[in-house]
Image (cartoon, rainbow, N blue to C red; front, top):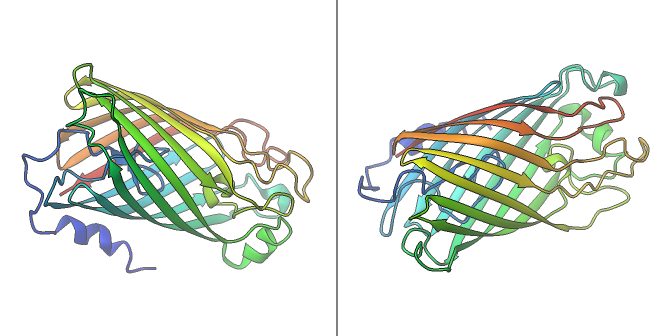
Length: 296
């Protein structure tokens, strides 16, 4: 996987196929932790980059999230084609520090690769901003988690798999005159903690349908303030560690996204991930989120 970060640099050296008169600032979204364009926690129907019809554009991002006991580093890249298709890749590294020492897992790093595909099915956010029609897209996220030599020890007793696929449909409505954006994503998933704790479990191995909501207000043309909510499947609520030991809470954030130009954006957020492995670390995990995105 060492060659994969080179994709981030390669996208930024693409020929200038996305003209500067393409989409408006922030209408390509920012990079989510899974790599797809949207908010920080959830994908939107928007296609990443500022490429419009007949154009190709690329983005690269790096994101850092720090809560009371965990540190998550995410980096990746995305390719937007003709404002119709999106291909993305993200690499996640969760540092659990000493939070899982009670389970004999002190210093555990959980790493995950995510390859995403998204296709715009109907509508166009900007052109349809004066109509009720939203932009609608569908996507797939192929995920594989790597816990190193601890993988069989960690996932085996839980009945979880190391790989899984999420599918989602997003509807994004832009009210351009009012400077408002609203998004609803319906995700079919069996990912535990987004896949970092594997997929499914001994007591619940099936897919679950979960909603994800976003709303953003454009404070000025280059600055947006928003809220996100992401419901989680909680497949490990019952496990060999005891009922509720790995209970999964829903995620929430409040974010501020600033795009000084079409080539760069910065997103700051306060994120609440709820309790993670509450049997060994009962306090809620909330903290600061910082993401930098470069676009071409």
